[in-house]
Length: 157
Length: 330
Image 1 (spheres, rainbow over the protein chains, first blue to last red):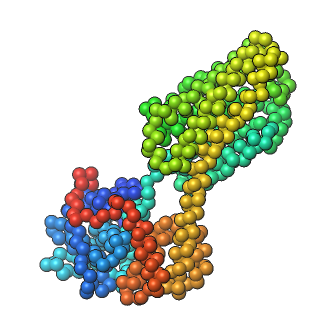
Image 2 (image 1 turned 60 degrees about the vertical axis):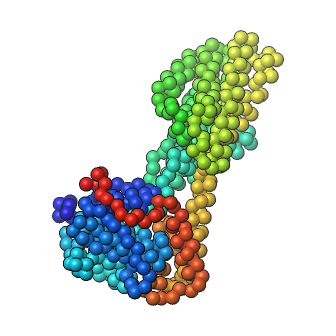
Image 3 (image 1 turned 90 degrees about the horizontal axis):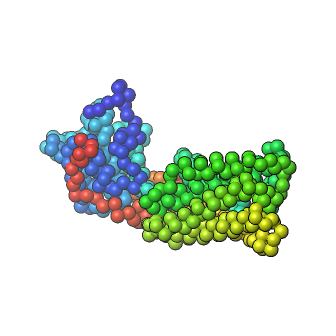
């Protein structure tokens, strides 16, 4: 777990530490996150029914991280939920205690982090870790959706 | 000052305004294209667009120094344009070494200073080209413009135009090329004119026949280049306006879902600092509401689908099955 003195890194600093440019692909972002995590990340789409307000989930297993998303959601929303889980993975590396604050133990004792819209609604006021994970998701989404400027645009545009 | 010069100055002022706003917005340093526009604009301003040439030169001592300053500004503007084009079309020689330009400016200035020319003269070259020093000054200056103008055309032949991708970009480059041809022709003609004046005086039929062609060719070439410079920032500005209008429309449509007024949501979205991020935020908030069990009105459902299509247009969006840690981040 890396800390910069006693100061906690901000979500922006955490995302900038990945060194991702505008127009980075999802796979590129995932690889950068896995690099800091130090384990492979496996992605699994969940079938439609029975997940309620749960939109994404990260299971932190000893040898890998499992990231679940819902197949029924619009693709851009699926990706946002994955980016939110990346937020938790990154906070786990940079923030002391972030990995224990929100985890539940469902998968044989492995910590589980979930993005649920009811938690998110209250997180805006109360939960610093959830709020930071969502902020990281937005910052990563900005890297994903913004188009890199080509030489013509940079020079003449 | 002709109507053509005033029109070119106005258009170049427009380029400058758009590019300056864009550079400030992105917090970027001025690149060679913007530098070219700045130098060209100042050069045009010395032709009496706002303040008469005689008055400006009077402020500098009334020694025709304004003529030299204008020519140095033009050399700087054309050099920067040539550099900008080389960077964009990826020619092998990036035209980045300023030494030949600086040497040329120095030599031109030395020749300009080699003769006394008191009293602002509105037609400096016809009046003084019979003096060898002023002939050398004018000829070297025009040779410099000719060399750079033709090099712009040559760069277009060497460069990789296919990477420009869109017709407006190609149009800009062809306008630069056309401008280079016209400026090159004006320069060659002016060298011929000055040589005729040096050898036989400015009253010969050849000198009288050549002189009127210079300004239309030179300013025609500058006009082409200014149009080429104008197209990209105008299209960028229109593109940004379209993004703002689309963001505004989406927020107005979704406003009732959040219990907000459509008009105030639309206005807030239009002036948003980052309309793209604002649209994304709206998409996530709307979907979160749907997941939380709130039904969305059919137009908002359609809006959600439209926004999803917008955000998934990129091929780099595919969710991988798995990724392993890269060497770089270990």
